[in-house]
Each structure stands twice: as C-alpha cells, then as structure tokens.
Image (tube, rainbow, N blue to C red):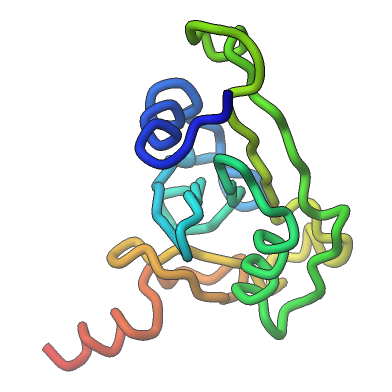
Amino acid sequence: MMMTGDKTRRIVEAKLNAVPMCRGHCNERASLSLSEVEGELIGTYACPSGYVSRLMNYGEVDVSWFRDFVSLLLRGVGEVKEEDIRVATRYAWDLNEMGSGQVLKEAYWTQNYRRTESDNPNRAALFSCTNCRSFYVQSASGKERLCPDCRERRAEN
C-alpha cells in the first residue's frame, strides 16, 4: 500500500536520507532538505555551497508535474526532457517496513543528466539558497550562496 503525507515524509527522513557527495560541483557532502510544493513532497540534495546535485519527488509521483517543476526552475537554462526524469519504486522489504508491496515512488533529476556542457565550470547551474532554500541559477563555479532576494535583504541591512 502506498504511503502518503506525513507517513511519506517520515519514511524519507528515516530510511532514504542518505548523505551522498556533491555530484559535478565539489567534493563536499550533500544534505537533504524537504519541502512541499503544490502538495508534492520535494527533496533537494545540495552541498554546503547550495549546488543542487539532485531533486526528488516522493510519494505517488506525477512525472509530468515533476518535469514541469524542474523545467520552471531551469527556465532559460535548457530543456528538461522526459528521459531526464528517472523513477524508482521502493518496496516494504527494501525499506525494512512491515507488510509487503509498494511503499512509495521517487522521481528524481540530477544536473549530471544534462546533455550539454556538463563539465564546463561556467555552465548555468541550479542552486538552493543557504538561507531560505529557494532556488536560483548561477554559474556552476559561482561563489554566491544566497538567492537574489536574500542578497537584496542583506544589502539593505
């Protein structure tokens, strides 16, 4: 039986909160932050600099919605194609949960799936603000850790 809402969040936090290395940006560890967007549970794996190495959508995922969501974040940077979104199914036995059958699905996207300029340090890349967790685009080699809104608020103070 599929899990929803708070149960999905608890499963993700307890069983799927791996600590991977940042992919394609640095050698720091990425951490997971969870948020809800339009009722969907979104996971963001980002390094301490804010570089987003992976975006996840957990639960009963709508791949079209998730692709549109990622496309909106990357507007003006490049097209997100269907094959850029991968889907994995988690089962009770996989998560050491009671019962049997499917527990949840994960749709995921990584910046490494982009087909052009993946090694170019000046390519446009997705970042998550280290203050408010909103998304913004800057050069992969950029040093800014705050989104434009947080930078503006900091400059005003």
